[in-house]
Amino acid sequence: MRFNIIQKIGAGILCIAAVTLFTGCSGMSQSHEESTRELREGHDRNVADLLAQSANQDFLVGNLDQALSNITGAVNYMPDEARHYVMKGRILIEMNRLDHAMTTLNHAILLEPDNPDAHYYAGLVYQRWTKIDKAYSEYRKAFDLDPTSADYLIATLEMMVDTKDFEDAIHLVQSNNEYFDNNASIKRILGHI
Image 1 (cartoon, rainbow, N blue to C red):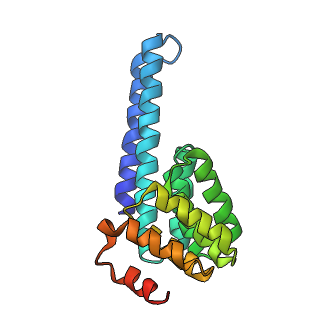
Image 2 (image 1 turned 30 degrees about the vertical axis):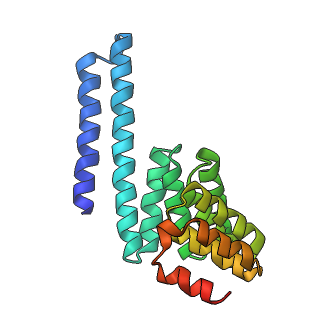
């Protein structure tokens, strides 16, 4: 797997070098400069995507140090991609580096305020810090952004149960019943009310 990534990165670098040599470094016209810039941006996006895929695979098998290294590389190639920051935040949560995770997730939210995953994982950090009101707020934002996600609803309901907001929890489930009518986890939470 690592060899394939190195091959693809190397191929991208060779393409950039070939375009640079073909067009000449000093006398490029505007269209050649734009083409080179577009080629470089495409290369950076491809490398970042490959690194993010590797990070996800490493994360899934528990190789957290390598996952963090790969996703940091993806962030370096594409610093404006919120999804890479979300993945980095997830890895940092698993490593129990919660302060750094929250900083990373806040950056993802700054880049993409409507990213439900960023809000969900920020809620998870707040929950681990036992800041229940803030956890609820982030979970609720995630659910409001994606009301079809059972994970977001379950997290929101758990915070509502913790704060004894039973009536609103029941209303929230009833108003979204078409998505979650047969979800055992949601029925279990409602059983605690």
